[in-house]
Each structure stands twice: as C-alpha cells, then as structure tokens.
Amino acid sequence: MKIKTILLVEDNRQDEKLILRALHKVNLVNQVQVVRDGQQALDYLFGQGEFADRAEAALPAAVLLDINLPRVSGLDVLAQLRANPRTKLLPVVILTSSDEERDRLRCYQEGANSFVRKPLDFTELAETVARLGVYWVAVNEPPEGA
Image (cartoon, rainbow, N blue to C red; front, side):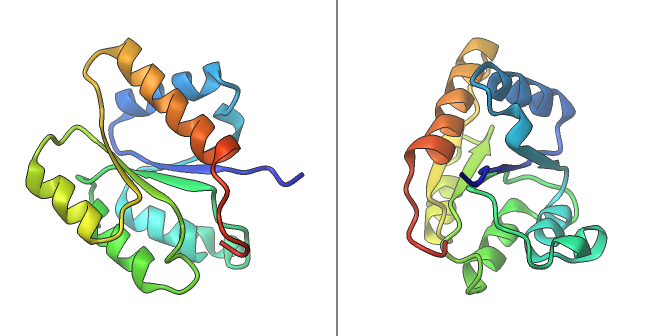
C-alpha cells in the first residue's frame, strides 16, 4: 500500500504547529510535508529548485493551502496547479483565516476543492484539521493517475 502524504503550505509557525499536532492525534503527522511559502509549494509539486530530486515523485494526496503567503500567493499557486496537466486534478483545500466572501468565491473560481476557515479556538482547529486529514488521506478516492 502506497503511503499518501499531505502538503501543508503554511507560513505561520504557530498555525503549523497546531495543525501538525492535530494530524498527529489521528496518526497522520508522519505523512505531512511542510513548506512555508507559495514558491516552495510550487517547487515541491513541480520538482524544481530545492526539490529538484522530486521531479518524478508522486504527488501528495492533498494540499492544505493558505491564501496569504510570502513570495507567491496561495491563489497564484492554485492557478498554476490548475493550469498544469500533472496537477490539475490534485485536491487543494484552502485552509485560511480569511472570512471574506470574495476570497471564498475566487478560490472556488480558481478550482479549489474546498474552502475551510481556520477556527480561532485550538480545539475546533484541531478537530477540523483532523477531519480534513482523515478525509483526504483515508476516505477520498481520486481518479486513476491523479
């Protein structure tokens, strides 16, 4: 059985720590790759730059993507993923603190699979992230080759 990973794209170290703790509680923490900005996410997914050794590596089961990222915004990352045949079907979950309707609308217009607002309460955040992790790694069934 192939191990499925989650790519977490998060620039806030406190949120990263909370998200990893939540995934650890459901035994998914060892299956998470963390990058801290949009350019790193693109490099990881397309096997470029510091991740050139990943050029032919399997894609993650899902990407948890923040909107407000340094260097390349989450929306620009999403647009590039949807424009590339290799990543156009890759599940992307927007995990953000934004509660703006325009952000939600734009994310879905750009092809996000889900838009999840980060709860402010740690317990709620932990439960939300745990459910996301379990769903995308253990429950979701992507099409062949995706």
